[in-house]
Each structure stands twice: as C-alpha cells, then as structure tokens.
Image 1: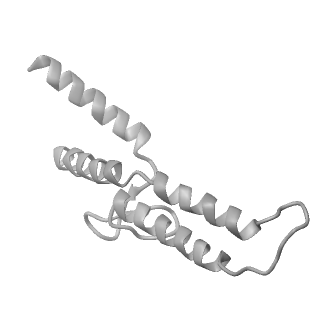
Image 2: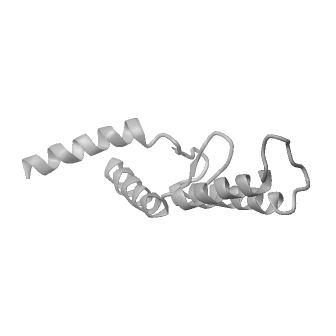
Length: 108
C-alpha cells in the first residue's frame, strides 16, 4: 500500500509537469482549454486537430499550383497530412482524459 501511494504521488507530480497542453477552465467546471479555444479534454483536442488536417487535405485536392522543384505538391501535402492524421494518439487521449479526471477527483 505504501508503494502504491508513493507511485500515485509520483504520477500526480508528473501530471502537474507534463499534462500542460490543456488547463482547467476557470469559467466552466470539468472543461479544459488551451489559450485560444475551449475543449472538453485531450480527445476533443485530437478530434479538432484531425478536422483541421482533413480540411487541409480537402483544400489541396485539385490544386493547380505546381512549384518547379516539386513534381506533385498537392499529393505530397495530402500524403503528409494523412500521415499526421494517422499519428494522432486518440487512445492515449482517452487515457489522458481519464487520468486527468481521476487526478482532479483526488484534489477535491
């Protein structure tokens, strides 16, 4: 039991130092926000990022602009953005939201 309390204390300290992308909203309880937008949690942040990337993918389809040193700029941009979308850690976002909720519950 002593070891688990020590590990929980270490987890709380780590959360304070590393879960910094989102801060608790001072306006609404159980809401989080970066400095520029209100979000429901880390998963909502990832969904928002994915939506931004998807809009960029759609915007590059059929782009007639082609710099001379890049043979297929639209395709290159699209592939890069599709890869970034696949790299978003949604499962980890759900986990971080749950850990953050549990840690905030401990504070109360």
